[in-house]
Image 1 (tube, one colour):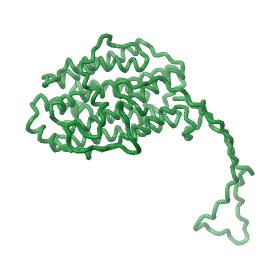
Image 2: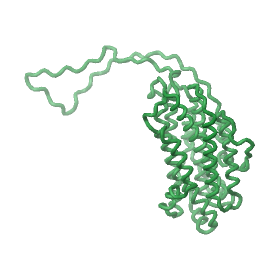
Image 3: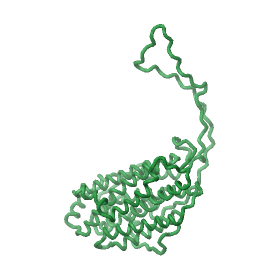
Image 4: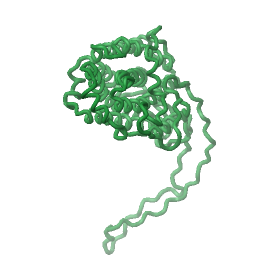
Length: 394
């Protein structure tokens, strides 16, 4: 993970680390509890009730065997982090914490001027609708991980990264809100677009449909049909929702940035993109591990339908936000790049490419995730957000 490239990360299953031989620790007998402050004294002539007695040696449990851990339906202690079965999950958590930032550290002053004085009506339409889609999507992603996925994981090293992921989705939502507030946009109008614009609503509705059943706490993953549905849902959110829709979804703003416009917003999105690609990489790794552990094969018909639905929703969305092309970017480029990224995610999942022959029409997009960020793009101030050591991205 220390040399992770976001455009072509290595998601081959990690070798399981052998568990060190465990020697059961001898447990000391518990010390007697102190008298509770303020407790009433026994009445004269009565005998205090005898305190319950523990077994002479205390309680002893068998040591954890990391091989008992599983992605779901594991038999190990969910409260005991190590020994790891999935050391790569812990590495994801450490890398995520090295990429710490907040939206308040990036100046939005130039964006206010650009939005009011430089953007064309078509460019404002693109900018506003991208923000409108993203504000809803990151809350949906937060709900997916926090309510549908995390509680079903049975290895704590998986859960602990996902806890960080929930925080990051909330941070992203704060970032979009900060951009909206900085520009003085009508919040009621921007936030309601996903409800009233069919092309934006279509993507959210598709995601909600993939999430609805698996979010239930009583969704039984010992049932093979339910397990298959859960794997497909996790694949959708990791590989498509975050791996394609988010990865490709920032591109219109980056197209403005390449022309020197809306640089503050674009820099905010670069930090979000780095988080989202880690989310995607982690999710794909978990899906592959799940399929391997459960000896589960995804139904190719359902996988094909998943890609086709996602592509149709993305195509309609591109047609709406880019109904008028902007300089250097149009709806066809957006659609073509989605298909190229979808093929990449399918390969990383070990699946057949859904759109054979799709070309990389925007080769500069990967640079947004991989560029070192000791300084921002346009030689303004130093922006250093790393903590806990150097963060290598290529």
